[in-house]
Image 1: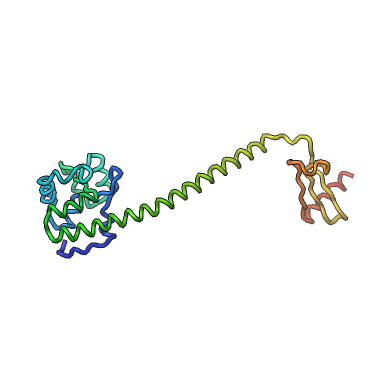
Image 2: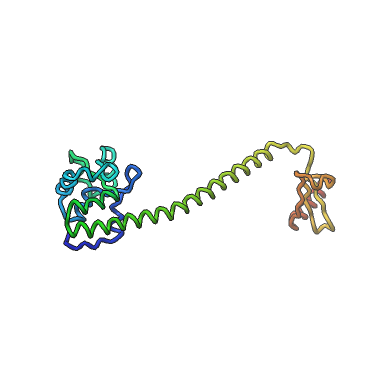
Length: 210
């Protein structure tokens, strides 16, 4: 990397991972941004170990390392490494600038911390939206379940006390009655107007039976 220390939000954010429910950056990515070797970066941290508790820095286990390698081609070399990489939280990144003691480290740390803040803001804003969407989805599921119960209840009822009736007016209009007019208003009563073709078909059927 050149001596230019102006890094875009996109570049930094693409190197922030969520591991163990924390947003972190990997030592190799940080070393590249700080323009130092990974070995030197971790040596400086070890010399100031008291400044880096586990909430600031932790070493990835084998499973986490394999997942990192699988998701990022730039970490392919880790497959054959006997030392697992270290992850730094936002607080760990802030502390790095004080132990590396260089102008570049200070400037890069500020940019990285700004990226962390920006990502946290985006996550918090979207969290409210996700919660509202989950609420809508939950209500939809409850509604669907209610409809399903209604449909099942309707399917279980046997309408064996009624038969279709048709009301024909002036051989031009026909109405379908799902039950007798005396049952008008009952839950299982049906009343609908049919098209002109239905009138002709019904009349023809009646003529054949007469």
